[in-house]
Image 1 (cartoon, rainbow, N blue to C red):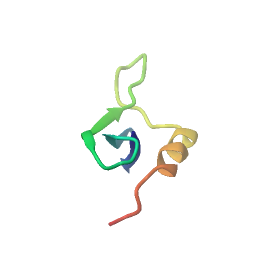
Image 2: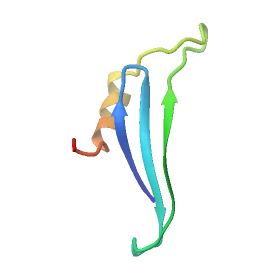
Image 3: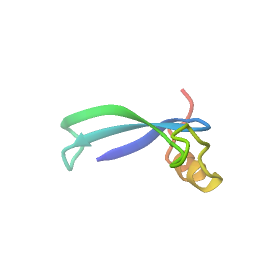
Image 4: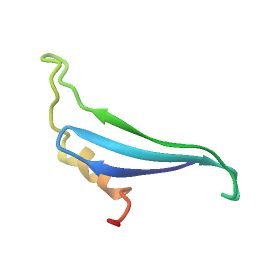
Amino acid sequence: MHLWTHKVGTTSVTAGFRVCSADGATTYAHGTRTAVRVDDTTLRPTPWSAEVRALAESIALPPA
């Protein structure tokens, strides 16, 4: 499985994924998912911590 980030926003992150054969020749599934961080109390979007943003940015694809 390949996993990367497309975009890291203030309160959201969009990740891409590809499930493939061990040799990478066959793709079984691919797509994107967006996650929004929500505050437990207010149920409103809340900013990611610097630590989480750095982790997400560490697997980001280079700009096209």
